[in-house]
Length: 285
Ligand code: PMP
Image (cartoon, rainbow, N blue to C red; front, side, top):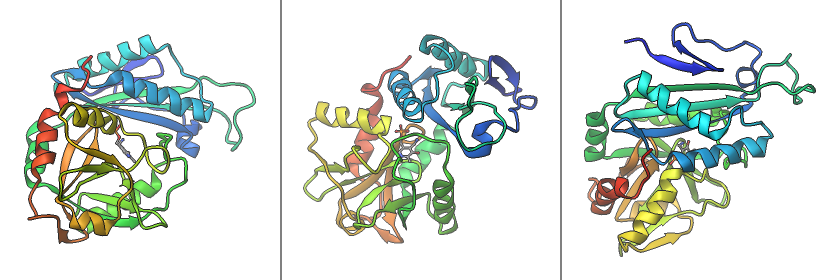
C-alpha cells in the first residue's frame, strides 16, 4: 500500500511528495514539529499536542498555516489514508520558502506544512517494555530553548547515535550542574527507594512532554507520590526504578544507565503499572 503524506494542501503518494529546496525548514531547520501516538486509529491527546504546537510556533513567530479545526481534519485524514491503527502521526511546519537569507523573509511567506503517519508494531513496543531499555549519559549540548519543539535536532541525533553505538536505546543529557535534563527524544524519570516518582520541572531545560503532563495527572489519580525536582545520574543508579516517557513510547522502563543496572536490572513495578494505566487518563480523538 502506498504511503500518503499531506504536503501544503495535497494528499500525495509519499514517493512523489516533495518540498522546495529553498524551504527554510530544509535550509535552516526553521520550523517545528509534533508527534502524536495513534491507538485504535484514534489520535492520543491531540488537543495538548496542538496547544504545544501553537506555543512553539508563537515563540518562533511562525504563523499557523490553517485553522486548528482544519488541521485536526488533516491529521485524522492522514491516519485514515495510511490505515494506521497503531502508530504515530507526524506534523511539521516550517517558516516557508524564500531566497536563502538567515533573517525572516521580508514579504511574509506561507508556512509549509507536512503531515505523515506510520504504523508501529505494538508487539515490538510491548516487547521492549517487557525487557526495558538501556540509557547512556551525555553532556547537555543543546541550545537553551529546548522548550520549543524545533526541528533542529542535530544534538539529539548525535546523542541517539552515541546510545545506539553503545548498545543503548536512549541518551540522557546531563547539565553543567550534574543533573539529568531529559532524553534525546523523551523525558527522564526515576522512582526512589521509598516509592516517590521524580522528574524535573518543565519550567526550564526540557521539553514539556505531553506524556509527562498526562502522567503527572495519572500519578495523582492513582495516589502515587510525585516530586518535581532534578536528579543526578548517581541518584538514578541508586533508584528503585527509572523510565522514560514520550508519545511514541508511552512509559518505557529503563533497566541500566551507562552499563550499570538499576535495581535488579528488570523493569520496575511502578513503571509497568503506569504503562498499563496510562491510556485511562489520556484523551482520544
Ligand atoms: N523531550 C524531547 C527532547 C523529545 O523529543 C520528546 C518527544 N517528542 C519528549 C521529551 C517527550 O515529549 P512527548 O511526551 O510530548 O512526546
